[in-house]
Image (tube, rainbow, N blue to C red; front, side, top):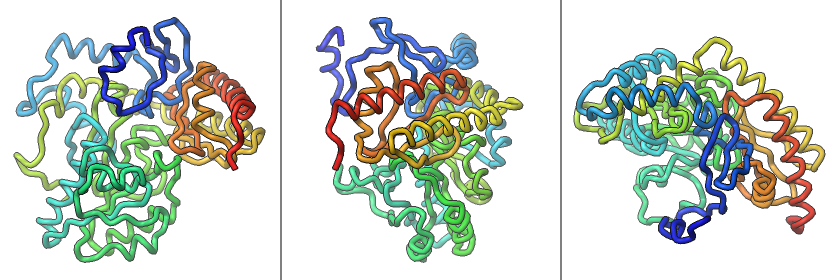
Length: 398
């Protein structure tokens, strides 16, 4: 930091390195000293088309010159266009736009409880998974099974039952007459990029249908092409009643979506709202992202590049005694054996590579969906060096 007082003005909610980033393009960031960094985090899977993609920049410029935010009580053209295109693409009946994935998940909780009042005799409990992460509002922290959240900001919001992930018997045992919904992530990103098994998610869908409760999929991180399909539910051959999107939908700007199907569409006027929800500027950006992701061949290219990435990461992992890899598409986790992921990520930063360690023993890779093969290869070289240097500098984990 050039001005240490500037950093001191920020509340200490996260430990940041000293770099100050001033410019980004595609898979690269530049700091105030002019040093380039290859970014394989992309804001934790937010920048779906990379840094400052021209389609998003142009859409924002055009919309800002026309109207930014006429207010949530009125229609705007971008809002209507994105609602129509997103519902058609996801085969959903209704959508509500918000600012963040946490807000979308909070909206899903509200929607489920409303549905329980209307269709299930006042049932309100939601079954979620241990080690899940649904956001940082009080309700979504209460829903999350992240251990670090357990004793924060007590008392939490009641009404959530947490069961082991990928354990269908535990899920079945937890659903009772007070249950209104099951809420799951297709891939638990914060837990270390742990995918649901096919049997588990398909079994969860059957369970919800048999017991008459809603299935909510938190696709904040997995949606909008991240897993090689528009929605991760497509990989599993299932159909949720409610889906939440965020992160990549805005391509770097604050935008999220709450999608509903069938009789889960039960909000009435006055039951959900927000000053910036559905504003023209953010939905214009979302429309630009969605149009790009839905272009012919785009998702096929995501799958091809993800295969190249996974093959390269598998080679690096074997060389250093790590793995096996986890995840889908361009959301990949590399478990580390007897080596600190945090130290490796720190060493990678010194070498001009941005990667993320969601757990002490796991590295996460979420590059831009349009990342080039050349940038993947460059990342692999830097990662290989970082793994070697980190091991030489630090004692092994027992």
